[in-house]
Image (tube, rainbow, N blue to C red; front, top):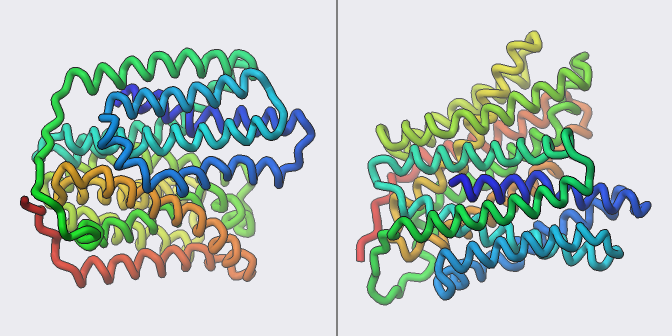
Length: 371
């Protein structure tokens, strides 16, 4: 998990800032910077469906090495401060390294976890991933750009070592299944999880980007609104292990119901109740934890109901759907804010989460697949 945390820090927290700063130094417009940064996510969509087969062919250890090599290659390009075309290539490499590590790490955590503690292990892993995103920007608080590049390369080496040792020291429990003639059924088994991952990406990334704009008309200063975003992110990090524990004790569907209920309650309160800043921090903390839990529990559900040989495909599906929600969410939420109706964005969150809740009530818990 520590190795995965290191690469999360580099891939999500260090490389995007480095790339944006280098592009800005070349006089590139903010729009073009945004487009080039989006290339990483386009790479994830384009390359993601091939990752399960890649992991199956290469094995986990070699897949991690490939992810590390792509990430290191992106950093080396940034170290050279090359022309625009080469920097775009760095964005492509970074996206490829991210999606391989993302799926391989999630698969490894799911398959190595014991059934009775799987929720807690996945919750801890997801909390560490949130921590990685927070740690990355801190690198630039204590280092200049040149130092940050070299520091990132050093972290790559340490992270790769830890990841490979983790794979080498743990024998994965893989249940071999007979020839699979029901392609696509695993999506039906985790349909609630996939919907939850979409809602999680939709609300999470909308909130991080647009909460300050939502609260500005209420008279909160930008610095105060930034604290709200931090509270949201802190909830998304700290509450994942407890939610995983709840899934272990009470079942995934019960934990999903708790997350849906908490999200609806938090969104409704934030939308219609004018509260002091300290109370808003508590509300968005709860919202961030519940929304992040929807994605965490999607991973737990996949690990619970699917055989090990299907896990990489399921992890890819969850990653793709979460990313799709992450792209759609800010656009839809921004359009709702443009209506001029203050609670509009959070009402949009209420609608999305309520629909998920209806699906959750309408579907029976998925049963584990057997050979």
